[in-house]
Image (cartoon, rainbow over all chains, first blue to last red; front, side, top):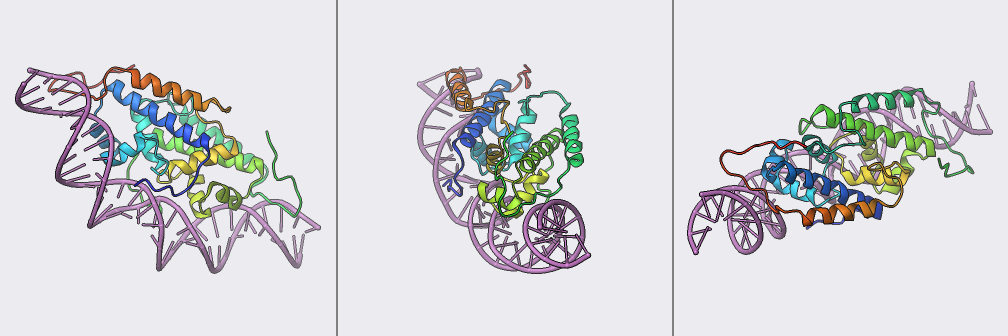
Length: 113
Length: 113
DNA sequence: ACTTTATGCCTAAAATATTGGTCAAAAATG
DNA sequence: CATTTTTGACCAATATTTTAGGCATAAAGT
């Protein structure tokens, strides 16, 4: 029934749609049947169908695994250096000053860029 | 409890970790509290915490909405042209030949690039 | 044209993600 | 350094996703 459990920003829907389409395109290109792909991902065909429609309620792990298996680039990079990127990020964060975000009465709610 | 309902490829885990870290970094940068962000996304703080750890079982919609709200670029682009990209994709696909993927006994299972 | 396979869509049941609440420790504030 | 706020972790109850299965239609193979 596809219950609308939460309302998301238009941008999110577009991103989802795009992502799903990239995956579907890759699937066809590789000539994998829905069953095949679903099986490889480790989910049911029904869920895969939701995924291919861009359903926001599907687990992100299923999306990413699909992309990985099909070779759809995640975060710009297609190669394996993704692990490195993650680690860089990790460090960059742990080194940063504020561990927790604190606020009092009146302070700038938004600090852009 | 973080049940390990399925086993994913290392690359997927790395991507998830990276994504979560990007979001967390952006949150701190903007000085939003976990409560604040969770509320804006429309999820509980508990779920947000799973998300910030890179939990694969969290709905992709929550991830993407978080990224959107925090300005974390999705698919390389930060601006609004994401909608256009989606539409281009859409058309590119519907115009393509094979609607369904068919196979018989022996044929090339993998057609790379 | 006929046969086979893939896809789209629908259920009820089963599995599990999400929630709201609480607590202790950590971090920022004044 | 005392106070306030944020964060990390946990839990039981609930809401929701996921599943298996079936059926009709569409597409591809022979």
